[in-house]
Amino acid sequence: MGNLRAFRRDVLGLLLESSKQYGDVVRFHIGPFVVHLLNHPDHIEHVLQSHARNYDKATRSSAKIRAISGDSLLTSNGELWQRQRRLMQPSFHRHSIASLAGQMTGLTAATLARWQANIANGEPLDIASEMMRLTFAIVGTTLLGADVGEDSSTVESAMETILTHTFQRWGNIIDLPAFVPTPQNLRFRRAMQTLDQIVYRIIAEHRSRKDANTDLLGMLLDVRDEETGAGLGDTELRNEAITLLLAGHETTANALAWTFYLLSQNSDAERQLQAEVSTVLGKSVPTVENLPQLKFTTMVIQEAMRLYPPIWAIERRAIADDTIGGFHIPAGSSIVISPYALHRNESFWPDAKRFDPTRFATRPRAYIPFGSGPRFCIGSEFAMMEARLIVPMVIQSCHLELVPGHPVAPQPSITLRPKNGLRMAVRPST
Image 1: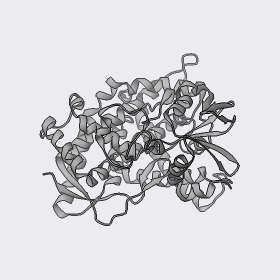
Image 2: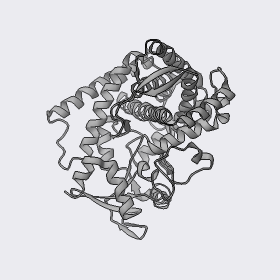
Image 3: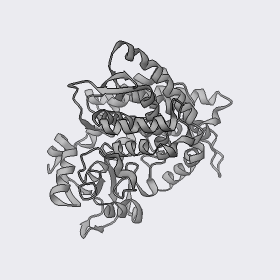
Image 4: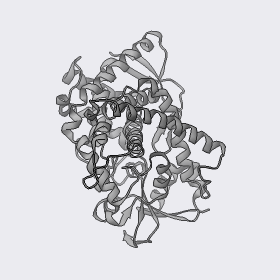
């Protein structure tokens, strides 16, 4: 069984302790599978950039995620991935993203207005859930062109079931097919049916609208193959839409939730952030033009993603034999790159457990919250702009305090969620 038991018991602890004890290249056996953890930026650059052609996503993790998103930008390889990337890239260009800022701040303002009742009655909020709800509304409006407010709690619950089940399947040596009616498989199938109903409804609404091409999903509806003239079918559109939900709202929500938790535990950083927001914005709503001035805000978000990267593990498969750091990497074996472990490597991050946004006054090398190389996250600009607009608006409106005694721990699933949510009191801004 190799390291399977340790993997299941505490995978984050396994990664940290293994790299600390054995160094920058560690070989694991997860049952019959050979897995290598890389924890040095030179080795990570080798796999994700300089020798990326020798490492694909024909991995166990991608196979499991494919049950959620099909052959999408997240899971595909080769020419199919290149085609999908070309189709979607224009919508994520910096100038295209900038035009979405007003919608992001408008939806954030609506969320903060709803929180005023909690300020008045002292009722705490689950900030992790609130960020899921907000980022889902933003992705729905800006990228899918749909009002999804009524679906937010349904999608949040379905996503939690789907991601937990998918991660558990990744760690199974013997994985029963999805059609076997186990209780876990039945819950997964019901959750996927719920998600599919919402996504296919959005696609159908787009097809019936004249202005559908004003957002990413509408643009994909208009795409035609250069040779055949055929457009994307509903299944292809569904796959990309679900990828946007997974990669575009789940990850950003987690990053924001961890940011507010860390600020609640670090009063000096919170005061410095409040001072910057007050100086730059006063009581005005932030705009894209303000973002370059919000330097400490950006560093706070970057430091939160260092400590709690939303994607805590990246997997690749070695196509041919290779050598990394003097160690033989056999063809067919897996490479795991963990931003969570790399970002806590004391060789590059002194006192790594400490929350210190000033680390980002200079550009660090061992920092990959969005991956690296050709498959660098296509939505990185979208996510960072969204976070840098939301955080100042929350700071302007209120002060968040963790409810005393509420347990906080990272839950490694496909993403890195707060295990028990984040129960926080909402106080008036001072």
